[in-house]
Image 1 (cartoon, rainbow, N blue to C red):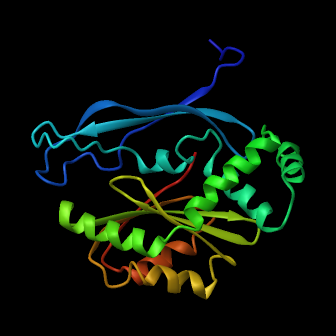
Image 2 (image 1 turned 45 degrees about the vertical axis):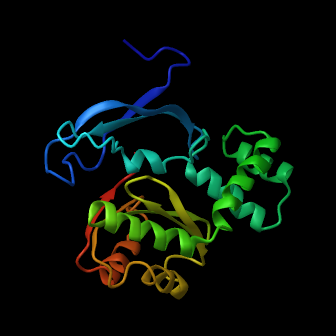
Length: 234
């Protein structure tokens, strides 16, 4: 039977790790962490279900969920992370909100000019935050609590600008957003080396790797002992 008019395709994501980092027991489903419809740059909408898992043996209350699903959109927003970066890109090009709205609508993205300002304000909160303090505190917290460091990175290209979003793998908190003049910008490697190079990192996860394949060698050079998990966005 065909899909009903107005029905939205559902994408279901489990955590990228299904074994407890403390006792190595299999993680079990607890509840659905998020279940929302997200609009993507293609103009299409998908319902994204992010499933939360936990350890029945440790009973420590920790819920693990999909970093891939988490990175598809900002918490509390129904536009994809790339759309949010597109808004930031045009804002930084000094485009007005009505002009940005027209650009996005021309690409099939449904958005109001009011939402342009709301979304950009959220982006700026993270972009202008003290990322050095946030990242170093998170790395120390991971070492203390989990005895390992797991970070999640997203690379988003908007024309000539490369956006990198740095996440705490365990909490999915956005620790920093940076912009660079492309993947080969020397400042990109320099910035990442402050937090990755020499660290005992167990895992780095990134998506959108098919077009950004120059990013993977950079990670391998900076953190040669890290385990890389690359997931393509559908």
